[in-house]
Length: 367
Figure 1 (spheres, rainbow, N blue to C red):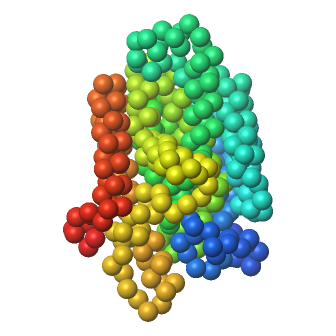
Figure 2 (figure 1 turned 60 degrees about the horizontal axis):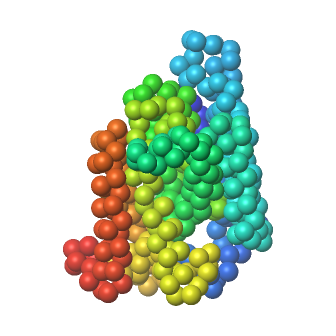
Figure 3 (figure 1 turned 90 degrees about the horizontal axis):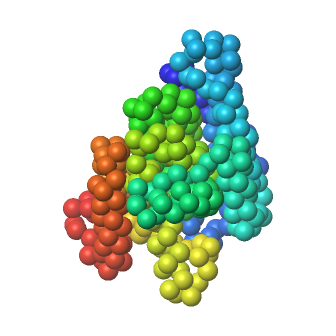
């Protein structure tokens, strides 16, 4: 598993470096008037391509290792990994197409992530088998197609959730690394080395990308990168719960509660205002942290000031993520505790959001 992660890291870092060196003069101009833009200049938005190349190469190498060494291989990466790679491509390639052209409408990208969900169900047999809620579990047992529908909803939605929180240097990438490592830890606890290898190599490839993304912001992940993280984590979460009855389905839910609740809450507040849930705005939680908390950086150079504030925003959200990841890892088998932490996070998020909007942030957070 170590050599697979090293391979994944170096391939991603090298490919990302080549993109930075060769794509700056060819990158699409991202409109200066876009509300989610928090940087100056034109920066390549195809960092997801480097992550994708690293994953395809490292996972293929892992499969070849298992094929040649058989039981002697510690990875146990069977042919299902190939179906995993094939099924994720529609969503990822759609994200990359948007990054290159900026002309692929949201509805088409949603259709492609839905296709990736359908392929995951067809190729890997993905379905949510239980929610550890008596009446709901009885319903899922009576109508298995409901579990498939839940899996389709999760796979189609999570890539867009990661895309929403991908607003500042290192934010979505580090959140993906933390979640992948947490999933890998529990996978190892239940003896699923192949799934752990996929997740650790995904984290390693993401770190290779982050070399160029944080703190200097020389390369962005774009929709392609966000979709990779969303699809891989959604697939892995469902497979982990599906294969191992010890793992509570609320374990991945608590791990992912930040991007998921950010998406749900954003859709709610837009609908309340009479706007479309798909309309971009600058009122996401991480953007409020940038505007209302990370404000005490002053330099004459406007670009440098924006970059430093951008970089100082992400650690606030990394800490926010760890507040859910740590209890999830500690109580990955305890459904009532996991549900309680999910509810606690949602309440805390809304309270924190309202406090920031109303300028009631504690002074120590602004220093």
